[in-house]
Image (cartoon, rainbow, N blue to C red; front, side):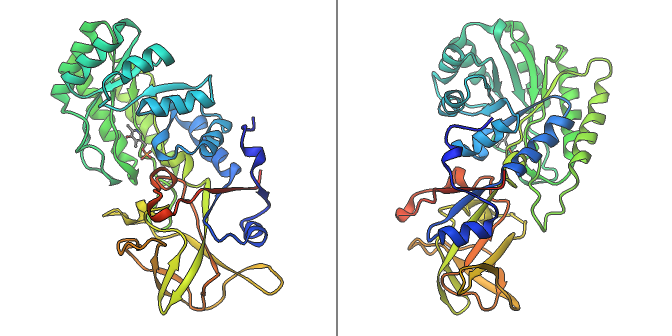
Length: 388
Ligand SMILES: *Cc1c(COP(=O)(O)O)cnc(C)c1O
């Protein structure tokens, strides 16, 4: 199940080998196929429904290939270009248009050109527009998004989208009256460290369904499943799936079919990033990647995970060796001329680190590549594969 481009990528036995062979002066994204496979397997084996990959977390074609090769066939797409990207690459993929606000005409194109039948709304305006553009309500499954309380997530996603249970119940009735299949969705927030947040949200969905009086055709539990970053005390995944399974029992004899839309959890671990120190000035390091490149998420307010890095130096025999020495804090600047291009917290590194040494950031797959810019001419886009 290899992809079209991946066989052309350089393949190495380890990250050290990448450093020894390429001595990269530009950042290199390293893909670990085994880690993508393991992440997908957790969901495929244990989530009690369909698993959709949320494309926004990492839309790089080489990463989509990994997710597809790992067995994921459903994609949470939030725009027409994302649908075109996924279906252009995997004609048998099933796209679900799970953004509650859509540009005019995009639902029409998604429905007519790609046969997309799942949509989300959280207000009358978007529901009216969706029904007017698709004109075939009986073929649609329309998810009404409810806002969930601020729970165990590091990044909340309910102040922008989602409505109250009462308003959602009214919209569900409208969906049913229009002839479409009424369904419910929510997103507990990204990097959610509490499995119980899902149980709370399922309970809100159950009460919303009850209020509406209509039978729910599906329940979409959104994304939010965490990446395994050090310093975040991430609970074991089975706690999430067990909690979700138990919460679904409260629907009694009528447990609706369920879906989930993990982004981060399917792709965070699969990617590491090799960066190089360009200059050391005292305790400041000037790196070849920064917050306008791969490190945007590390600057978000409330982001609590520790930096997860390893550092290497090339010895006289061209071997990449872990840097020895005591650890001490360094300020990490990116390569652009902008003062804001700096990590908000110091990084602990061996005291002898110098220009030309390498810092490898682990578990960097989520919201890195997806939001990188070419500000000041720096656009990280070199790729390599480690392992099979
Ligand atoms: C961002 C997003 C996701 C993915 O969230 P993760 O926290 O990366 O799992 C899923 N669904 C929707 C609607 C989103 O906006």
